[in-house]
Image 1 (cartoon, rainbow, N blue to C red):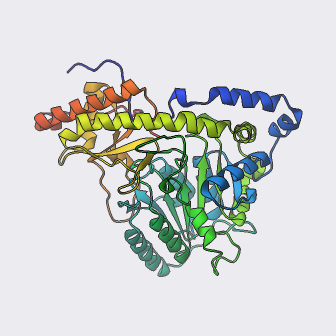
Image 2 (cartoon, rainbow, N blue to C red):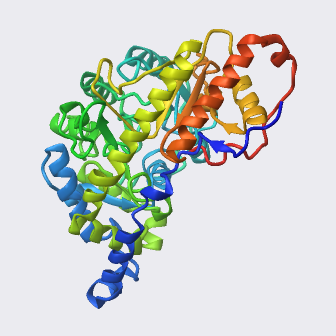
Image 3 (cartoon, one colour):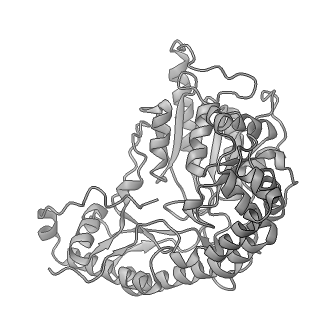
Length: 461
């Protein structure tokens, strides 16, 4: 069969070029570089916790949005969400003490390598997602089992000294609470509260990738404002703070942190993010060796981002450009889904919360008809329709050692943030063509060996 004209990439988790605020960044950079009082400190080594004006501006913005008290000392600037996870693991875990890493399945797959690099090969464990975000019963049963096994084992000597600024946690739980990648689900309020309670019970640190919180919109109505309560759920770090300091947490590190990033709301090349947690945790993170040696991460970029927030240009860009554009693209995708894929037996969740009225993020998560493997669909789509889609198996917890296998080979992730609107609709049409042909002659396709190039998913963030 002849290849469709023009490749369409529906796996690339990048912002579309027309969403990048280049003109705002240019103006902010000019303001920074024209004022010695700004550019001199911006171009030098920065304070360990990060560029103070950005911490101040973030504190203003985040405290207003989440309706929490303002405190810049709870914020530490990072070199992006991924780099920040690595720093957290360097400072707050020890493979000889920390028993397991827990990841909700399906997961943001590229985080698995970060945990392996930190010494947790063979101790990464998956637990199931449910309609409200996570299966807490399964997670607690898994933690109990690991703790019981470890109690009978002689603890090895620690690799590190926690010292004055750090503590080591027994477990690490990694989640994307809002508009999860890949499923698009948002964790309900009661699940958030119960997860923090569980973390306190088992000395676990919950790392929350809160990178899509500002990328939500109503299914009906304007996308400019985040007025609806379901689009302003408290972060787990806010819930942890509101519970007060736990008696056993004598130094006040807390049990949940918010890992924020400018990658999805400004541009991935900015490589700047932030952590918000307790004052003790934020200070401890700033004392990570690579930060102390190199100075504040992304010091110059942080000065530009501070300008964007202080002027209100970022907030305006989000409300006037990014959210309305993503809302429109999501609607187009869902219209194409109902027209082309739903009649073929494909299913898709349409709201982030069960029976909710909003959606957000970059992705939708499709469930294929029974006995139709997504690996085959992805291969046929590439070879016959010049279409790249995310095979669900990619988003399994790699190296999962929980004893429970989470199989996503009936699922496909589609990204609506990157390609043009015409390509988005055309991509869904091509995917429908593939599914229809496989349904018509299943054995013919199963018998063929397609395969995919090794680098086909390099842009699947």
